[in-house]
Length: 414
Length: 86
Figure 1: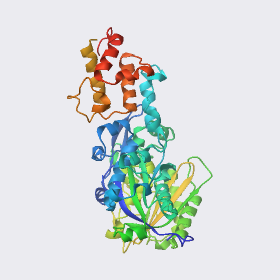
Figure 2: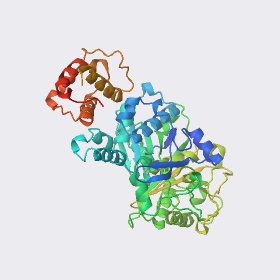
Figure 3: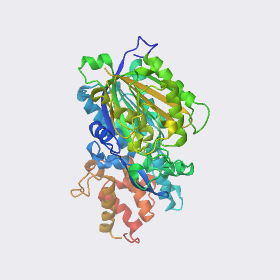
Figure 4: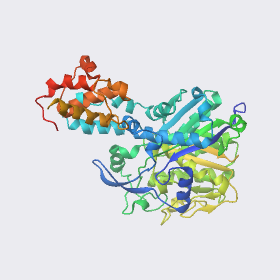
């Protein structure tokens, strides 16, 4: 229950659909995280050349026709796959569900770069004569495209839109969905985040110019948050969308419940375009903890945001130390070390990989730590091998983004 | 290009636009939209592909000529008779 909103209903997670570079559903993803299996592979993209990336392999044709794939975007496909899987997982009687009371809230880091780059590349072959510019450009690049493709595919007539929140977008999507359920704007929220970012060379090139693009002779070792030899971000694609419902509705239909959204917060650094701010990150975590009405020591697992950049990792660790002190009880892990940075999907996907811990009490590790950066040596950091916890009642999920946006979601076992 | 070759070009374009459809049973004198799942954006794809491949310009007022395979080939024949099929 969110503090200060006692009249509001508790919001719970009743379905999960995901596409990760190392798993096409929660079971596969969790198995990979516990087995230390990376989803990062060698990758080649226009202009940038050979690099590494987290690449998904879900079956696009499970929920779409070939014509749908041609008409839409990769982000749309990821969204449709995740939404369809989440609805199936929720056990909702979809045929009889009032589709006008379903809301779609999809977090994205960016949208439209992929199509714009492709069109300009094509247009070059026509000497930049714009009469050869595709009429598909606008419907593919409007910012609501990934959410809108879900609406079209599933016949959902409730609200649909994306939430642009850089790499905090996955959490922001969840938060938006929870809020809309509490406001009564929908009865079922499909909420989370997606990323198609590996298909735009601009993201790779920009991180490279910034000195923040990871490289390693072994792609599986390229994403290495907290390691002294980290050298940047591994760009990844993926998605994770949740079915969220009011607890009263979920209970009424006897739904399986993954957990309760106990608290959340979003704030802003207001200090820099790209550099993180540990003080604001800590404030964001503290606000979410207050709203969840719990003390830091009650958190069993923290899913960190750390991306494998020196500044980002150490700043987050400083923020974590200021909130959690030197407790060994709270465990810290990181999913980006397995799959890279799934951008708009990251917050939702990384949370998803931790939710099974409510049942199996295992905290997956952060991998690729050959030599731990002393500045990141949190006592509860779970390095390279999963660790069993005595019990797992609360999971706190960090997700931060450029322009200084911080987001935190806390999930409670139910 | 002969009318038969123009028809082959159109079929090739349609294969790309409607990859889930069986074009083998297409009737030349029945409107394409009655036989295939095609919307206005798909018709614009036909226009765009002809423009890209053969620099053929079809004015908007003439889109109606693309209703059936028969009418499409008839309309395009004078415009494409001097072009080589690629």
